[in-house]
Image (tube, rainbow, N blue to C red):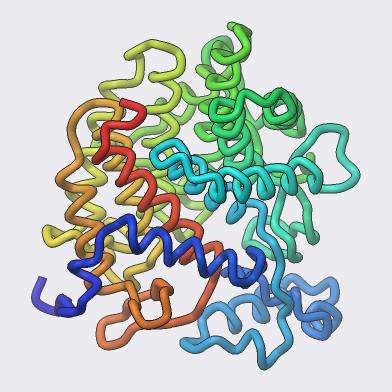
Length: 406
């Protein structure tokens, strides 16, 4: 692509293992406290100023998020531990521990997992997690720590990794409790005998379907069901994944929301990757190939329409910029998991990683850039969005390269 200039830096020759170490160290340096993409209302005065106004909340969040330099320290946004970020870092640490036997990684992974187990969203009957800041979306408002199924599903996966790695019952018990939140919290948006769709957040007043939510919840339920021998969980997970598969377009894509008109997001990068990973996880856990054809169509669309030939991650299928580090990370993850599970995709994962290290990695600071625009890059240091996602991406790539989990 003519308008993207690959940057010739020493990062191209650095091994993924070295970059992973430096990425994890940026988290360790702050005890895994950091900024997140939508955290503007973690500035007390902005939270008070926004009050109950949907417009003012959105304006504050969008202004802080879209400013091309980091204004968070200036407006006194507080750092926090983000449960999704901790789940990603813990999975990367567990992966590296399984490869290297590092006691430090094992201890750090346990600390993060234990923190997650001990700090769920307050006021709910089941363990569940959300974001550590108030968050106004177009479709709903989530108070600080209000749980959602996406964050909870990622935490469940990290807890199950912890259980499989250490065989410590507390992680399995916490994951089992959280899966009950995924399956029983309000509300069911659609169901019949073979399909079910659940809401993003546990709020009866919301009628907004986000497509990846049911897939992520179904994959987590099925994985737990296999580990515990509970076939009902596998069946219920299949209903959730089957609903999402039923909404696949003839081209192999998924819209972000259902109906598609309820969101300006159409076929974007990382949500497509979430769905593909969830389908693959379900089929692998359940020992079935029910959704393999849908997966193959979907990953073909993902490769062709959401990545450039040189490995750059498109923002959406019809839009290149901004190239976002989350999309880069998701491509590495999804194609690495394809390699581990099906024996193909490793070359694409390596190509996306090479482009990312050449264009989105700052070897001087040890941080990944947040976004690349047509003529400049944005170096905002968001721990969850940049570092946590890339730690898990690098770990997935290394696992696939070594044959772990295949």
